[in-house]
Length: 143
Ligand code: CTP
Ligand code: ZN
Image (cartoon, rainbow, N blue to C red; front, side):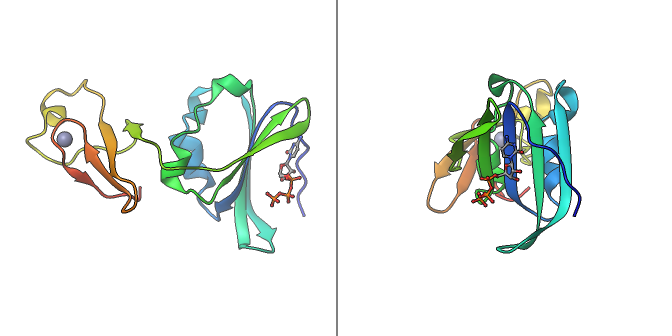
């Protein structure tokens, strides 16, 4: 099995559905950030069969992980400080999503004013329904 060393400070995103790590890398904007990233694909797992892991070495305040709750709330976020896991975060659905999904309503102001951010608000937590902040168009949850 391929081994990747432990990190000093940053995040280990564990239990990512196999094959989804690159999608998450992009959604978190890691391509634009100056941090060290290891993408582990198809890691053997007792619980999941196969899983992906993302290891991100960066100052803790550098990353906003809120969107992860929307992508997949089964991901474990291990927060690492001074070489030790200091927290295993539980993910919840974010109250607001900014530039994560696009409004598909052709009459929505976001399709006319191209520079506006696409903002969706959690309208029904139980049913996991998000609505466009501008026109209330329903969003499909999965991306
Ligand atoms: N890890 C790391 N750097 C550290 C500490 C931990 O990269 N300084 C990684 C480990 O390699 C592992 C993940 O963080 O992939 C989770 O570590 P740990 O909680 O010790 O493992 P498990 O007990 O297997 O986690 P879980 O119970 O969440 O499955
Ligand atoms: Zn809209």
